[in-house]
Image (cartoon, rainbow, N blue to C red):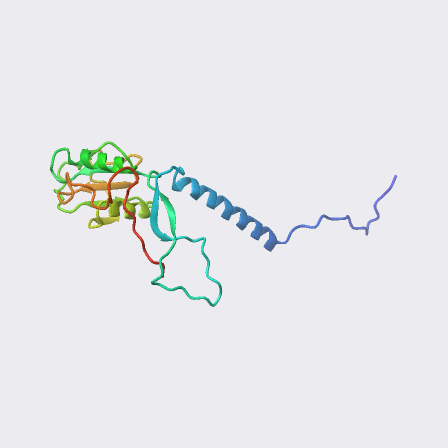
Length: 202
């Protein structure tokens, strides 16, 4: 039998440094975050259009400058990766249903049309309202509507007859300016012809 001497040390396994462990955790979190956001942004369907923001995959070498007048590369944007709710605030019967059909014809996912809540004032100008995370989608929808619309965060309480937009993250409060009119931002019509906007990074 062997006995351990009182002064002898036991061999120990080396442990990774806190910095190395922290870096590994950060890399794993970054990869998981990317994968989650990719899944949340859309289902990867075929209907895509530019979102209006520069593609982050391009990089600038140290010491190099960017020409603000140069066109940017736009990242793909799935127009069927979010849902829209159209509510009639124009007072013109059937206009929200008409707008719903026109947006669906362009490839958007639009819920059944509804009216604004009782007592809500009639709108002259159409408004596009978004929930957090749907800011880019609201800009895309505003462009398809012709661009001359109000764009803002979702009002609280939500001024529709049900008090909720269900699964939608975009609410269009249809005003008299666009009621029963064609989509001003659609070029040539037909499915997938949604307007695109370009912004220059700078």
